[in-house]
Length: 130
Image (cartoon, rainbow, N blue to C red):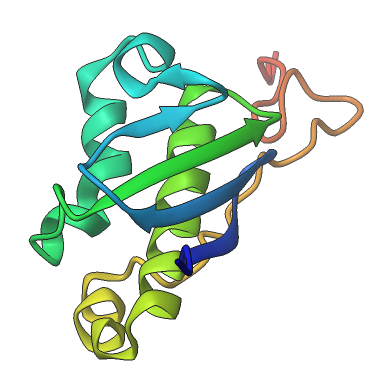
């Protein structure tokens, strides 16, 4: 018996996710925990499931993900990108719908660094003319 497993990496902000995809019943495990236990907000679970729901394969695959770094939102986005890349490796016919939905594009936005002489990255101290 050959077990088909697909592996891909996803990144978002400071988070890096390693995602494995295999045929199964639709269980999603993140860092050895069920997705509902790991992500306490329902919106983050929905973000992770988006690629599977787009292709109507929510009950076709089991997802195992390990994610490090960043916060909740970045980790959910990283898993979403990794999952989309796995689905692409599983079947090349998935490329067009995933590309059109924007799931294969790496979101390159990062936090802008704080500059000296300012309160934050762009916010300045109050200016007084007189």
